[in-house]
Image (cartoon, rainbow, N blue to C red; front, side, top):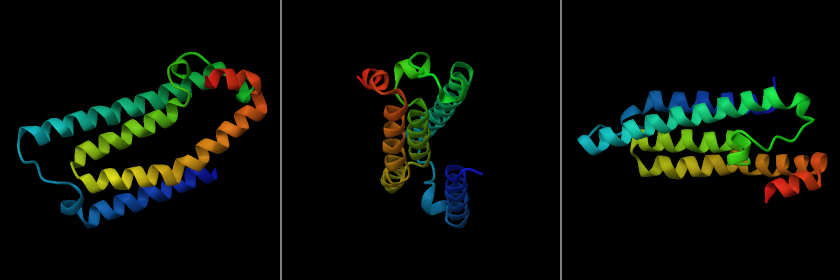
Length: 139
């Protein structure tokens, strides 16, 4: 199993455990229509983020054999890293769904810790493999 999958699985398991121990602390009870709207918008962002991730992965699998071809269209034509964009949408959806400011701060910290280094590492790898073609795509 890839290291990245193990780390994500551990993070999800720990998160679920914490939520199950302290549900009232993490998930604020609804205080009216505004909270319900926030939860609906949050759920919509979660679903949209998952759709972005799945479509990007499927598009990449269909258009690049073994990572030998730089994909610059489809979801990759709209944003350079659609899978990370999907993760951000999912995270923001969770933040809106639970309606707590500290969850937003936690999400930002966890995202930066988890993905900033990985993002930079992948960028360097893409430059190494595709060179000037990837640099032009970055612009």
